[in-house]
Image (cartoon, rainbow, N blue to C red; front, side):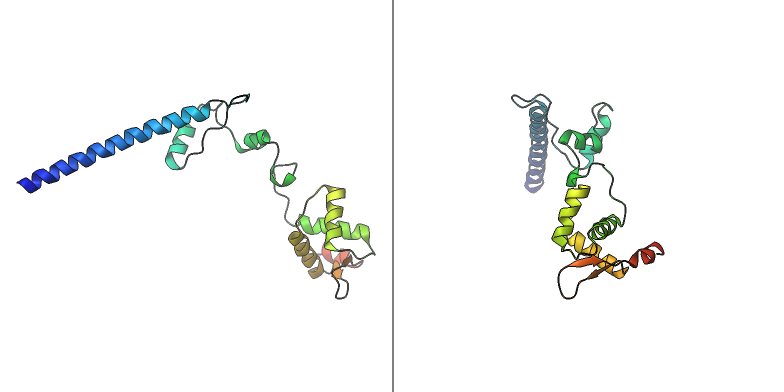
Length: 170
């Protein structure tokens, strides 16, 4: 009898503790939401609400009117542009890097050029920032198509004149 009473008391204490925790947590989260929805001192636009995870995030997004919901392009425009410095929001088409590197090699032919020169020309002429690994990969693709060749045992590359027809037939 004493054991069952003790077990019931422990269960009631645990239930009260859970309810108190849930109420305190809900109050704390509401205070955080209110705090983050206020604009910072001297700021014009209200700050973005704190990111939430899981079901609560989807439920809140569905409950908001359509005018308050923001899409990815709107957030990116507010942020001041896209990642990577691209003007458009779309990804470049497959094979674009190799085509751009080939154009640079053609413009500098018959001179052999280093990847650093290719990168500088891409940035200067086309406004494209390309990583050295991407340039190296594109050079490997062009070499496989026999459009570009490495000069001897150096780190320079040049365009092969006869490779254009081979690339067009692929």
